[in-house]
Image (tube, rainbow, N blue to C red; front, side, top):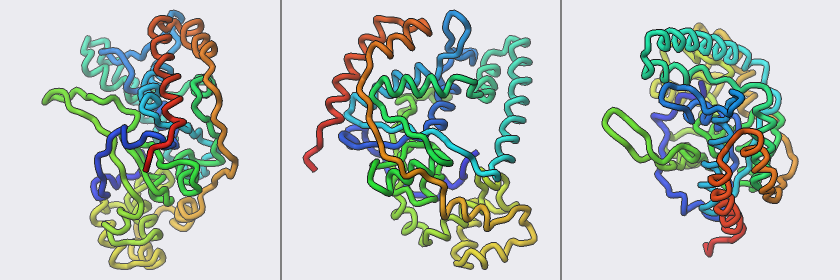
Length: 335
């Protein structure tokens, strides 16, 4: 679900060129889910090899990341560690939603409505056993750093930015921002074009800056956490009934302090707000360092071509871009 605060935070469009020489910490699970849901055929069927094994995530990780690396951007993929117990309700709700979507997908297929089937197919995405390990192997073979978070991946990404190991967090969600990640970049791993009813539109990366958000909303760090809790997070999915982003912001600014803010809505509370507040205030993060591996072209070919039937010719063309991009990433821009 993620935090629903997008409509009230300021953002600015940026170019990939502006990120040359920069290191971006990517929320791995967020992106793998994105590829599994978006890299599909017209009827919603995921890409698969000859044995029927899903390869949408591998295709996305390979081709989209090479596009970023070709711009001289360095990448760290951060994988989730142990989730807080409070996230259990969210995970259960997601499971139920996928089961409902699967029923509707199968019904649409039987009716021959492949537009409808494609819509529901994207909502049935599951990360199956082996996908994570295989994704890690491919990323490391591409020279991309793989990092194991202690807890939530997004919060670990924010920690890497705060301590200077990365320039920004790459994610579609806002958790990294709430825990103080200096910069959040959205749309980074999305396709550059998107089909809509009105035609094809351009999709460009957008930067959201922590200090700018606080200044624009005229709140402090603790108030931002309270705002996130009021609208609903992965740790309290429904938030507070009747409070959207704008009303929550007004309440946060009026009452100012966490105790006073939640005292105002205590009759509607069905969760321990202090526990959720603590997750954002003191996230569970690892202090381990970063290691960037060397490109292993043979390993890439083995995973993609030998094991999953990717085109050797296409893979080799992309490998040429990968090597050039790796050299660009090692260069430092003048400013």
